[in-house]
Image (cartoon, rainbow, N blue to C red; front, side, top):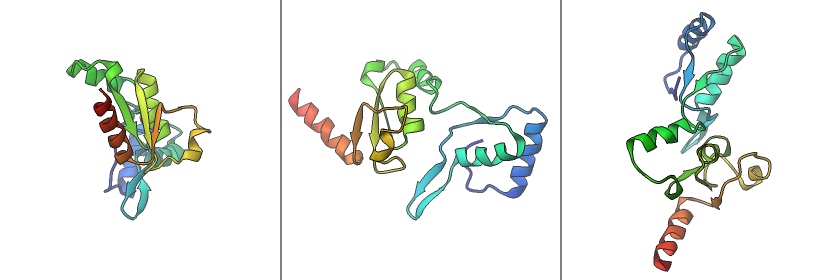
Length: 146
């Protein structure tokens, strides 16, 4: 299962039937919301919660926040982990991915997570910026200091 803007009741029925018949149930990520210009809409995690309510089953998540997604990248590219950072707007997936993979994590507050969420989360970012532009400015300043 992944983000699906064409989700129908028929697809949900088929998915529930397959899952109850022990078909492997895999999801790309557990994000509950997807930001749009008009507000949040349900993302993969919300769809999985809907299916769990009917089947009692949760998917095996193969993407964020699992470190395997980072390891797959490292197998394709030879980047040093200490020179990488996970940047995102969600504590429970983006920051968690960085933590789980052993690399720096950057939270931007221009999406789902708010500053008030940081204290309550088990996943603490290494850096926090109001928006991606703030991260860009910090990186430019760092380059000028070197």
